[in-house]
Image (cartoon, rainbow, N blue to C red; front, side, top):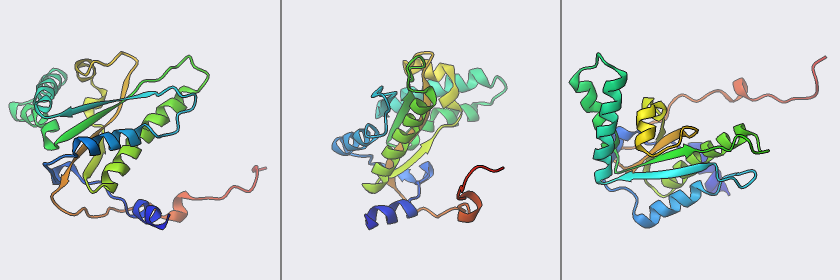
Length: 192
């Protein structure tokens, strides 16, 4: 257990600009996706779906991103569109994690949404633990209806994030973390 705790206490995402080929093997990718399926799922609703984008599909998705960006930003310049068209080409594999809730179910929708976030985190941890570079990002495209439509999502679906996976090209540096005492408190009973 010490190894797991130490890993979690020192975990650091690898930013997309520090990724290169190759991405996870098919076997490793399946393990990463299966780790995403092993999250708390009250009611066994499987309120998430995973869409793998790799190979030539990254370029096709780049065209979708360019169109969506231009449509949402009428005053943009061609260079901005080109950057967006290359967004998913920055990593060998991108996984779109879709939150698909069942609002009318007795399990509160919020718990279903949290399960999607847990799926993102489990896959991130699995990929990093296997030695791959991994980063969980949302950015504007996660909230864009044109992008969601191109991915075949239903109107009720939301994108919990995109997981970028590859091989690290440099070691990550840590960032400022919150102070333990600033965010942890102990409750001893109602305030009267």
